[in-house]
Image 1 (cartoon, rainbow, N blue to C red):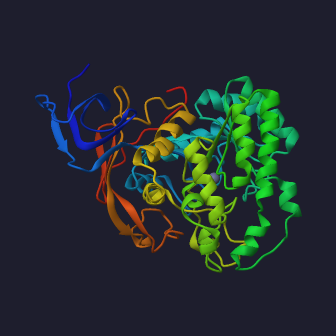
Image 2 (cartoon, rainbow, N blue to C red; image 1 turned 90 degrees about the vertical axis):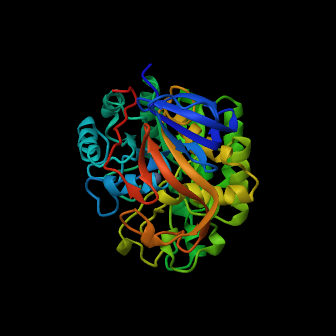
Image 3 (cartoon, protein in one colour; image 1 turned 180 degrees about the vertical axis):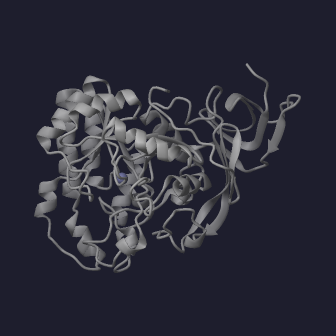
Length: 446
Ligand SMILES: [Zn+2]
């Protein structure tokens, strides 16, 4: 074991055993130990005394659309990873679509990795994509280190990433289960979407009718049945419909290998507050009503929903028109996800320990990142330092995202991220950033 180089001391360190005053010792980018608050600082080590600011494990965001290369005017690795670092996120896993090429072959993965490597302010992993015609590419992508495979059951919004029908879903799922991989699913049923009213225009209530709960419920019901039949491990992306929660709870009780995520916007924004034409609030599935949101929080509390991820999916401002039918569907929230979730969580009586469980521990576990997700000996020394009681008002001009369109503009949020640490290095400090020090991560550690 090499010598301790750094000690981070706080009266509030969030560990898997709870929050306590502690000194966390770091050597070679890893946590050596979590000692008593006043433990002596080893010779030669630097002490960083954080006072009463909370030291939490860096967040792991497993659902981010970086769009680079190809649509880097929407977002890119440089801007996305800076925004993430500013928000206390130290690892992101990039979605396979919206970049050109999409991550659907090993060759495409290599292209993305090459683009990402020099721009990574935090650690980056990659999802692969499951398309109707790339079943033969799935095992090689798994071997090349992607964390799993994303598919759609309804149109994805970009032509180069077509959805799977039920037969193709079963084929891809069986293939992925065969090598012990994970299939992650955008679950909206295309037939239910087809039979929903086809409305357009600036009214959010009209948009909501075009993407009803039943489309999510039906897709999830089908997915569970297929996963059960095949014995596959599957993950439901960005759950919005609270009506699907009983189905999910039952499947989990029956032992189906199912996990579920939801997103900050479903947990903190409501359909009732969306102004006419405000397509910065548009995403698929949509933000639903306040009563639906209450049930999602309940499901997080009881474990039916496992984790919270951003689904950061920006576009250029010109694609966010005031017609909800044609505006780009995606919400930009990478930098704001921790304060947004924390603001609502504290109102509802949850602690920061819960937020850490949902946004770091469980997301790390989802992709098997056993070096991330906790302040514990042997883990990477990835941290966020948070002033949980300080507030700020969201000013889009202060966001690091490439495009500063945000549904959170003007909101006053609790929780200011003071600094962010990656493998024992402070990579973000009150709006300043170091040169990129992130690594590209791979499922098999290669
Ligand atoms: Zn997404």
